Amino acid sequence: MKSCPLFSKCQRNKITLSERGFTLIELLVVLVIIGILAGYIGPKIMGHPEEAKRTMTAVQIQGLEAALKLYRLDNGDYPSTEQGLSALVEPPAIGKIPPKWRKGGYLEKDKIPKDQWGHDFVYLCPGVHGDFDLSSNGPTGEPGGENENAEITNWEKDK
Image (tube, rainbow, N blue to C red; front, side, top):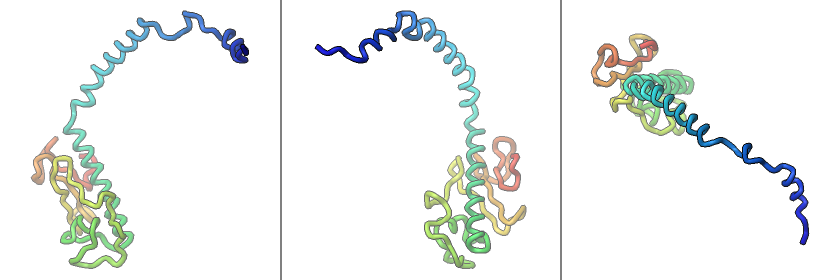
């Protein structure tokens, strides 16, 4: 019978019972701490779904702004109001036809997203507040509103 060359090494590195790992009490203390933290932090994070929707809609507006800027870099102008945001996913057939429309469009999923409440974004070019105005009417789907019902725009970033 051959002896294992590692056998003597294994014998030397033998772990005693007190060094095996965490005790049951240590594990329970950690679980209690995690439970307390989850109970305190969880509701604070998950308790604001409307605020999360507003933030996500603002991020969508920023993404659409970036796509519109790419469109302008390729074609010299932003799509007109009549062409709308659909010019980002398919070449416009009306108005000024873009000379270098990018194959595949300017949005990843080849469709115009809706805001977090399922409403279409409002696009106006030329805009009242800049080269173009891009907004979401918020949860009500109607222009205006206040506080959590206020519209989300590309010209008022702090709203």
